[in-house]
Amino acid sequence: MLKLNKNIKNYIFQKLIFGTIIILSYSSLSAQNNLIDSLENELQKLEKVPQNNSIDTLKINILFQLVENIYDDKVWPKFNDLALQISNELKTSTNPKIKKFALKSIVDAYINQGFLYKISGDNKHAIDKYIKAIKDAQKINYLFGEASASINISSLLAQQKQFDEAIKYCRGALDISYEIKDKTIEAISVQSIANHFMIKLQYDSAEVYLLKSIRICEEINDKNRLAESYNGMGVLYFRTGRSNIALAQHFNALELFRQSGNQIQLANTYYNISSLIYKFQHNKSDYTKALEYLDSSLYYSKINNYIESMSDNYLLKSTILTSFSELESLSLNEKLNLTQQALENFKHHKTFSDSIFNKEVLNNTVKQQLKVFIINYNCSNNNFNTYF
Image 1 (cartoon, rainbow, N blue to C red):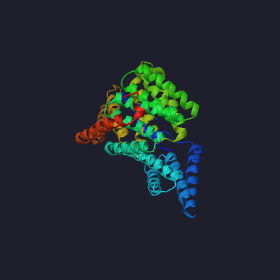
Image 2 (cartoon, rainbow, N blue to C red):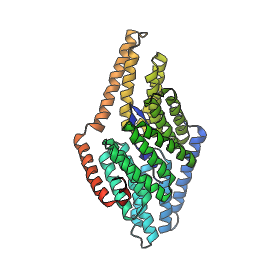
Image 3 (cartoon, one colour):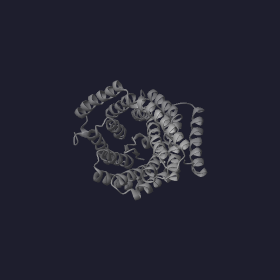
């Protein structure tokens, strides 16, 4: 299993994010820990038996299950790297089934590595991994891997504001999902298309795809992506003047992410809630509440090194503190204190923002890299001919 629940970029619309302090219920956290402990125990048992190709394939399967079920971005990469190492050893097997399994696993591992680079703000290495994954997947007709990497390429294209190209890649992945009858890829493709339409301000199209995403996620009981779609609907309702029901959608997402323990999306959803409370309420209690939700978002962003989220969090916090300081009911000292905090948070925002967006040479390198890849990919990939 790939970390597909994390691979899709959570786009910001008027500083609201697709996709909200949560403390996991003991039963939810315990169940997750039990699963991880069980998988690690099975992995240890396999180390004690005579090693062969069959044992190695079992190891790889367990390693990818650990990757999928561990949300700590400081922990799961070591399991992904080990899966890649074993897969590279297996790819020389004379058994065709073992060899193809290994080659597919290499594609999966590259996609996961690409995700890790992306959330760390290293788009150059992320694009390297995704391009390599697509090329390797095409060589062995691994349609699931090709679709997964294509969705991730689309998110990087969107970061470069190439939204039409991004939508084409998502639609190509959607075609593949129909071909291989994979509802998960279908749900992600549909959700990603909705994201891109939202950014293009094509709200009617975005709503159609979001509603379709919700139906698919309910059908396959995918709580993480269902929650992401709720966040998307919250953004859509806000942008189309239905703010009275937007907040409810984000709280729906919050409850589902609480159950899954998805910390990246908890950060995003807390941000959404904080932003909406700030936009529509303007008294001391509401400013305080908005800041509390934002601190929760910042907490999860920090522990996951989610740089883009930290940048957005500090900017919104500076904005809220500035507005808070303008309340007439506050004393002069309170106003000065809040203004000073606002300045400090804006400085933090600039530090992270510069590290992401102010590397012109690197950004131009990524754009050129994408441009060359798109040209080559359009010429060689028949799956996308309908759209290019």
